[in-house]
Image (tube, rainbow, N blue to C red; front, side, top):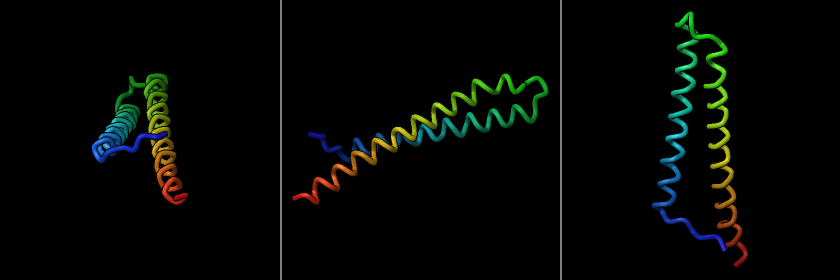
Length: 81
């Protein structure tokens, strides 16, 4: 049986999601700025940060999928009754 999330749980999840989005935005802006403004910052320097950004995006997508699965179970569980 799936434990129903409390409003506090949902708020915490959304705050976590917001943190991920802010972190992704920071990395993207930093890489873009550094590539454009610093002649010593190379593509090779940018690759690790871009890979990290890809991982963060993957984590966010996973969170969204988990939330969809959770909400789907609630919606269809209530429809069966």
